[in-house]
Image (tube, rainbow, N blue to C red; front, side, top):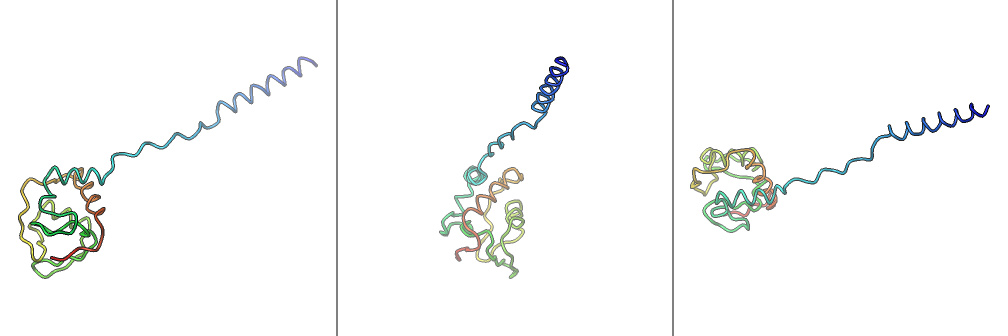
Length: 137
């Protein structure tokens, strides 16, 4: 009988050990966030010289300001209108002459960021400057 009791205890301990070892491990901490896309976009704008022509504060330079650009209504030289969203901004960076905002001339340089890897953070930066409240020329 003693051996049976010890056998039962041994089996119980073995089952507890097995259960403890097979329980799910504590949740792994979340991965640290990647680089800040807004800061990365600002760096892209500075690297390509975009901020020499596009102001960040609404002031008038050689090109339309980026302050409030995203989500604003734009009127083009042909009279058409759109809301400035990601697709339009991408197109304007890659092909500045595709649609020209009324009152502005195309003076963008040939060397522009064209990869999504550079344009995505640039879009985040432009969005961070305000949305839908574009100062008028």
